[in-house]
Length: 173
Image (cartoon, rainbow, N blue to C red; front, top):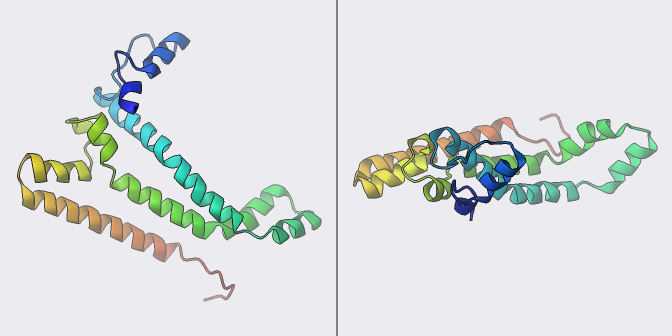
């Protein structure tokens, strides 16, 4: 679907932007090296936003309403309630959402492979590993790239969980 929408000949995105006068000529969004990564990023954000919203909504639903009522009775400004009450309480859900999104962004393959095949500007480690494994028959390079991707993802996740520890118990440990 996105391939059709971003198509330079009959894509709806070019049609809308031309009619609004934002662009003067049709743009090959996925074929042009200057716009290919931007197009991939827009599609990827569009694809993953609902899941991130659900994760954050689940975190918001875990916050007890009594806390908001107490803050309202005490006359606390809504921005202060957000920064001092809501945000710290949904921090675990935000951490999960950020880790999921980061892992998904690092391992992205499907959108790049479908929308911009053989474009060096949008090559990620996943695409590089697949090319070496299947297109070039360089199994060692493909396996090494996949292993490196795994190690990078695992390392970032461990670091994020270590530095983002949440003290729910309230003790100063």
